[in-house]
Image (cartoon, rainbow, N blue to C red; front, side, top):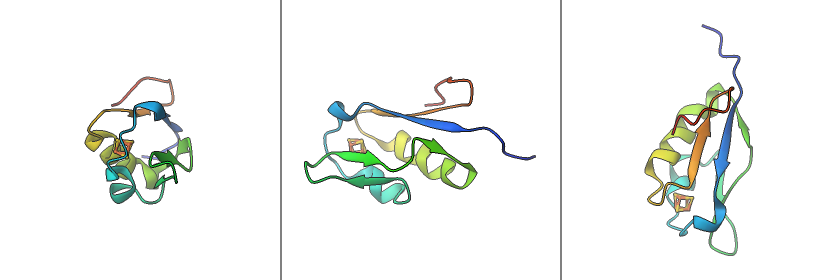
Length: 76
Ligand code: SF4
């Protein structure tokens, strides 16, 4: 199967408590900023980034990271 869809990140940054989990699980897309909150590098993610972004979203303790499918439906 060819992976053509563009999944998107939705992130409620004000809710981030700065636990540091997402950059550990998905260093290719998440990093900590100087103010102590996380930020993503790419809003649109591809096949290679999908699993690790899903892991970051699943393990965020305050559930502020979401992954949307190409139709805008929240997968998490
Ligand atoms: S896992 Fe969630 S709370 Fe922790 S740094 Fe990332 S966005 Fe913030």
